[in-house]
Image (tube, rainbow, N blue to C red; front, side, top):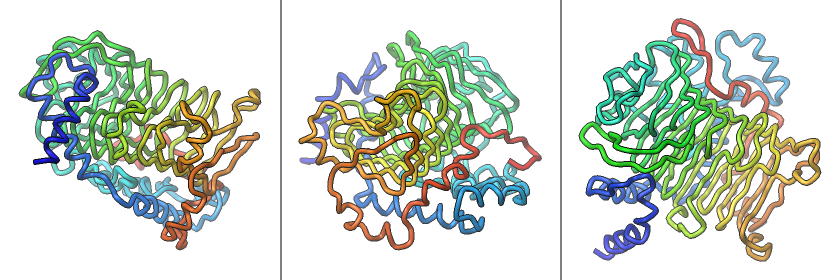
Length: 439
């Protein structure tokens, strides 16, 4: 009884913000919000170090299978690797299968990090998107992406041919869905982005998302049996809002009006992996505000991504929560790479940071905001096995004994060194997979 009262009070205090883009906060949305918070509490990993250790162990195993202890040796191995072009454990799990198109569900068993439980539409039916249009927000046409994502059953959504989808309003998804772009060249561009709000169990894989913009809102269907009035959308490429078990893999993103990916308001159990990010200012935002303590339950893995040309900042920018940033390639930034406020825990392992050559004031990887050093020096931000080039440097803080308190991370399974990052991230972004051909 007491816990229910606390939850109701918390939701009441957050109601103005929880309405995010919801103009009519009816009983359906209230129920979704309450169920979402309960899932967040259940999804929270009380010992996140175990998730960190498991991912690192799998990367070691993959490189050992390749017989590679360095980037050079890993890449040389590719000359004789045949169709299996995979140097990280997620890719190694499914790309080595010559019949990947006949066993698409295998992908759902390949996730790592905090989003490892995301199975999407596994074992549901396939839904083939054949129509690129997005003309009716309340009664979307059968065969469109909007019609697919509002169905209440688990679905594995694939695409019948190459297409550019311009969303007229935000695409509001329901739980238990996979958007799988493999086998087609799928662009979500020049319109609104994707909204993952108060739902669970979503995989987005193998699509390109760019040039998203704010949209005015209006009546939009958010489930097969419900629609409501929405206010203006933010212009994010992907907005994760009060959601759990989300995995975004092999997505190429650039130039969205707001963020590329936001994860806020109690969202947790998330992995962002194998993505390619370019041409953007404020890329990844984790945590809604410094005052929103519910994001202390947020746990996110950022692994095997390439932050490329013309990136500026927020890769990620975090509030609260536990963020594992591992084996990513940071080849460009104009302000900083990793930032935050409100004492998030950030564990940076085996990343390559290449500072901008022409800006002597942007060499620092890290940026703390809204707190003096006397406060932020208590936040746990640790760098382990990272490589720093062109004068890049990481200002560590928090307990220097963090690693010794977690010896399981150093029982032969510390993060793979950053010397392997070029190989690990070599195929970041949407892949050119064609049915009947190796991916």
